[in-house]
Length: 234
Image (cartoon, rainbow, N blue to C red; front, side, top):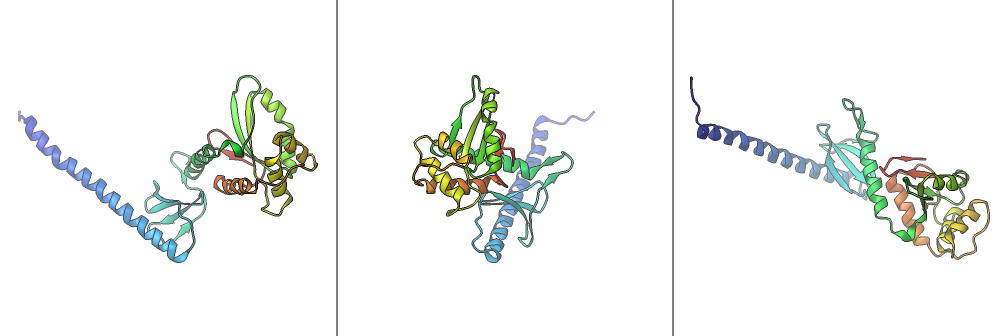
């Protein structure tokens, strides 16, 4: 029987370990080169595009592009841009939605208290949801009517005033007025029933930030509800 010394075995493993390290280094270098190529192509053909990040996906030759919170995919040569969801077929996972959920959670964590209207749960808090709402939205009014029942069920509800239309619209003005009123919750309830808001529109900057946030979250309409895990529904 042939004996192999422990020292010889160790010597044989060293080249293998070096090859693995070399392979990882080469992969990282190639990825960096691809990202540079992609960024140059996007800047050339889509000037003004905001690039939040470019990262590899599990799909070979396909990179994830995040721009203003929105996700798209681009080929390694920077020639083709794909819009839509990336699905891991074998594991039946929507990788795009997973990334969006993660982004939503992170984005909402950064929203300061001054931009929120928080309705605490009655008794022990069992769940928490965030709702982007518009005082002129009929469906928002219907959901608001369910607020007492939600709170009784142990759900903490956080509103972020997000008008469907921009500056100059009724929704934008009322959102700003509600934010500035002495009692924003009462003011919002009155506005949702069609009443006026007795307050100056002094929070335009906050409402603009909320609208920018809605783009990051992928809002498709109001009310837009985000769950603690980042999953969302309109």
